[in-house]
Image (cartoon, rainbow, N blue to C red; front, side):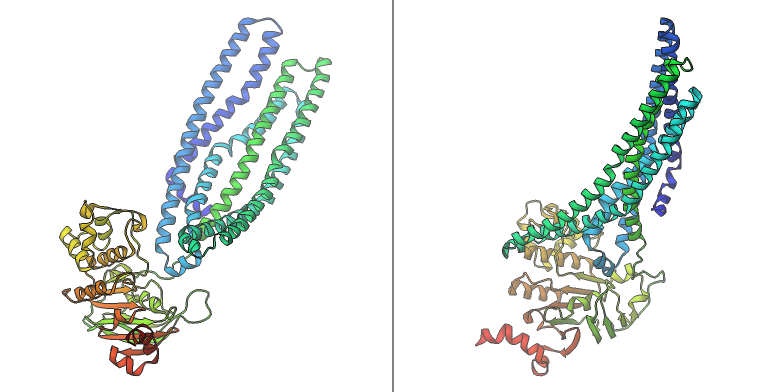
Length: 574
């Protein structure tokens, strides 16, 4: 949490002025009981109406100055806390963008969302309250005690006994609640995780009639969260009643002592009222301190969680070296490459070696879980190979700056992801400088021209988040068009035509061959028809390259490929 406070450095003025104005307000507040005592002893007791009016005007002035000071302090505290939250949120978002797929997979989406939203909001609230109350409340508590000694030493001894007892109670409750709030946030992550899964997978849940099971699972996690929140809430709730009991006992003792001393003529009635007011001020401020400690406890727990995330170092970093100059005719080369995902026992890819010439069309096929997507994700360094070397244009991918490497590659992932905006805005992700003619040409090449003809506004037609107002095939063609706009040297289609019919897919393959200069195309698919016309086909099985060659060669030499082909074509022929 301490490391996050560095983001307050641009708000030094606000972090100083906010507490100072609060201290000014507290100073005027400490004068109020003395003014009230003067009204009672010198005004009411002596029937001096002029003195009463003068003191009442003074109370009004103190209230006005206190109000202005409080509003000014609130302004500076709010500016500093909101600025801190903004900078942390920006820094955290940029840090998340720098993490590789490996870190994102291990952390989880729900955890990242919690850190970006509720955790940062809690830190913001904690900082705001700290700037306003952390100095003010102790000043009022100890100031009231000191002022009480100026009124009457013997009666003020009650203050000296009560305040340490209250400090011990508050401190013990704080120690008990800090670790529990960390558990609350962990359970909240769990609830958010299952909620996200249910919302994103609601169609599958309904298709398999799993509503009741998911409701039961959510209920269990929600009840666990509720249970831990109730437990820590009960502990935190002890703060107010305990402090009230102790202070009310102190007030009884104070009034009893004051009455005896007034009867003996050692103390005035106004002084007793002043002492009572000081004790009331202590009561109010200790309640504020109790709530402040609870909020600071939550904020520290949330800040530590944010800091833990910021301390995660990305496993893939960009080099600052210049772009390697190469003239190699080999576009992509794998040299004994293996890949093991984080916290997995077995390799996902084992000892993969092959070469792809520039302008070649390569097909990659294999069963589910054979490592096809893992293989192509290594080329743009979405994941880092655990063993071996990957070359692009004859240079190791680790010697490229990441941005330069990825500009050479256009990849269409398995899941077609579109963003809320217009068709133009989504396509410009491929190349922000592309003209409308280039965007339309890319859509036409991706067999998506009909998307424009069906939309009245053309390229300015709205796309909903995730492309929900498009069909599955339209989304895939849009993502392919977005990749084609880049005009990259290497085009990777990771099972990105699964929603297209055979005729549309064939037209797409034909259109890709018309691109000049001809890119290196790598097509990942589970359909033999999608890759059978490729220059070469690589067959994967359990992360191992078990076959390489043309369609005809593999039918004669690769048993795995034969099985895939037979399952899709031979039965239809028979």
